[in-house]
Length: 452
Image (tube, rainbow, N blue to C red; front, top):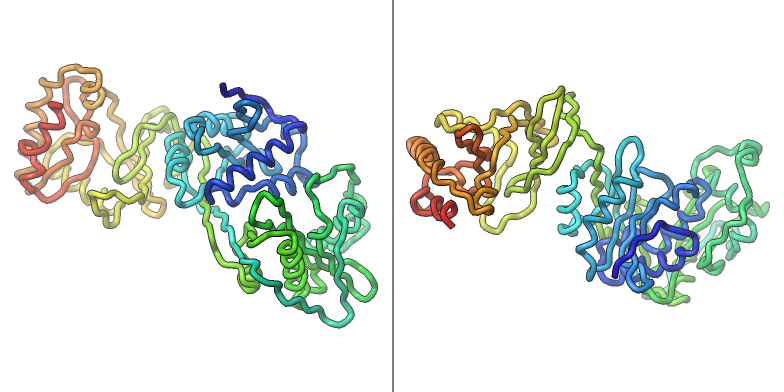
């Protein structure tokens, strides 16, 4: 039996175990692993009071699904073990309801993770430009480590000397070089990262003994990878090779612990110059409850359906309902696409010329591949057929549409999901039309779909 619980600090190790198991099964969540959870869980900026809103799904005392935040509300990780994939819609919906901020919720999806991406789109998430890349490097042998004269390197127990390492991070992540300002904001905590290994934390000092660079890796013997986080060099010591030396030393130490590869959630040139290569790409999808199309704000009401060319949503603006169609580029094994947004525009014009009843286009956002069109509120023919209700009264109107299309040398897509009846009239709500071919005509193909 599956049970739900809010996150409690006592669940910490179980979450780590879940993330290790999840990433053992596939690369689809490589951007979120146990070490990232551990690093961020005790990050000074993490809003600890929010963690109890994270959701966990258990089976026999083992976490099988989770909705987690990084440091704040507004972005979330949503994952589920493969054998419990049916839970994913519930978990994603929970994440939006409980982990969003005023702007909504963003979730990163692996570009090849079609099942979870499609569920996100079904729930009203839209792809935006933000992205994450996981880069990887093999650890077959030690990497060469060299330091400029006057600099030294050591392993460092950051948990025993937190102020020194936090001051280094303050400078290295460009918060400034005013130590008094740092001390005003620094708050010592008793937080401990249970899996922290000082042997994997490398510190570089200058000739005065000041910490000027560092690199850490995280490793668990149940995995084959080390995770690189964080890496920094203070501004005055950059471009001296200190970051490279620290990372290579940390990688060498991880290799000694047993790691055969290392990953980093970054595609910075710095890592690629060290030998890291791009391995996995993740795109962010956001659910904001609204979409802005050419300056007009549309509130998203619900998902309507997926077609070969896009996803459709019922939206509202100024009290009026519309259909928002978001073009997608998923492959279709029986249909070849060109420029989809232009095809929609051209097909719309061709259908207008035939006189077939279709919803009007209200607006087109070519850059973001979004179409706003009239919403025809009525019964979808496919739904009537599913309910075993007769659609015979609409066959003559369907035939009339077929004749109008044929007179212009066209076929339309006669599949029942593409037709809505309202006040006794039949509407073709898709814009797809193709050059007339008898094998795809109403008589040879279309009527069979309506009479199944």
